[in-house]
Amino acid sequence: MTNRVRRSLRVGTLCLLFGWAQPWRTSASDTFAWNTNQSRVSADIRSESLPKLLEKVATATGWRVFIEPETTREVSAKFTDLAPGDALHLLLGEINFALVPGTNASPRLFVFRTSQEHATQPIQPAKPKAQAESKVIPNELIVRLKPGVKIDELAKLLGAKVVGRIDSLNAYRLQFDDATATTAARDQLASNSDVASVDNNFTVPRPEGPQPAPNGAPPIQLQLKPPPDNGRIIVGLVDTAVQPLGNNLDQFLLKQVSVAGDIQLSSDSPTHGTAMAETLLRSLQSFTQGSTSVQILPVNVYPGGGAGDASTSTFDVANGIIQAVNGGAKVINLSLGSSSDSPFLQSVIQDVSKLNIAMFAAAGNEPVTTPFYPAAYPEVKAVTAIDNGQLASYASRGSFVALGAPGTSIVPFGNLAFGVQGTSVSSAYTSGLAAGYLETSGGNVSKMETFLNNNFGVKISGGK
Image 1 (cartoon, helix red, strand yellow):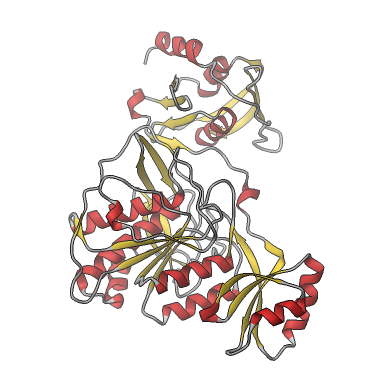
Image 2 (image 1 turned 135 degrees about the vertical axis):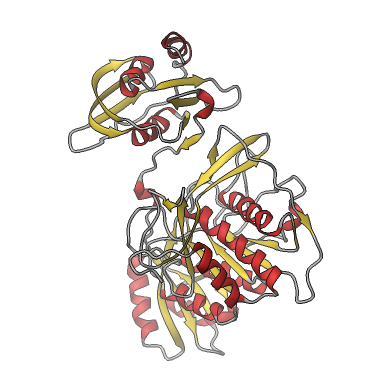
């Protein structure tokens, strides 16, 4: 693009701004502030990578930002109260950009070296890390009772409400008035001979949902065929709720189960669960050449179906796993997780693994080696993200990682395309491969695991 055209785009379209963005501190001394009320930008940046800068632009403006792959620049700039176009000109240097207004959607900013159509890689808005942290729910406990013991009388004695049940496990979620009452009840339960175990309940953050993408993907072409003699393979998708998929794909979805109450979903964008279902089916298409009997059992474990910032809990994730097992799942996908190690959740996973059920989970979207659960439990196959044959820059590289698979998926929704990136995608993709292999090999889990290890296995610091 010529400088002349580039300048006209800056002047003509860079006034489409919304709201107010707080200043970003990019290092000990660097700052970046975008005042969208007054259309003024200030920056004092010594050294910042281009993708990180564009994350902040996307967050500050609400724009959908796309960059041409392999476009790099170390940003260094200092200015005060510039118009957005002039600010971007200084920040991007000789790299081209274009902002395209959206009629019924946010404007799109394309950043590229060669041509606008090559700017296809989405930049996700930066999200404060605190929103994704797991924590103890201070007024709750998970209690497992010995066989024959009733929970209701015990809860009454403790002054607790029973807000969750897994009767088949004699497991119950108790809620107390406050943290002090919870601590006192835990002491009583620990000495009660009718109690098998007492554990904390932890939050599990909602996975990041898909973001608008500039280009779509070819539609999934799958035909549902009758199951083989040894039965249909069902994938339990424990996630946020799944919306109707359209394109003749809803026949691959069994009736949705929710362990977290009523489901209320927006029609404006796909949920994380919808994106994982699409990813599973696309993986199945590639493995089966377009014809499969595999079906997905969606199990919603997030309040409201996963809308907003609602977290779930380790109790509800465990309940979701049990519901998937009860629904006949031979493969369970867990594209979710947290840093909290829950003995209760692990015990449920241990029991399920004895039923010859394969479980796959996202390894985590931070480039660290710390455990991410439930992926880090030995009974689960932890899947990290691979980008162009290499470990993705954002993906976990802990010793618990077993497999690596693509971490990007494009999801059609309505008349728009949405992109989702992360080890969630990698886990769903691998679950689809596992289900396809089980269908074609007669349900041999051991052979399926060997196949995945041979073709998608990774060794990271002695990974399992």
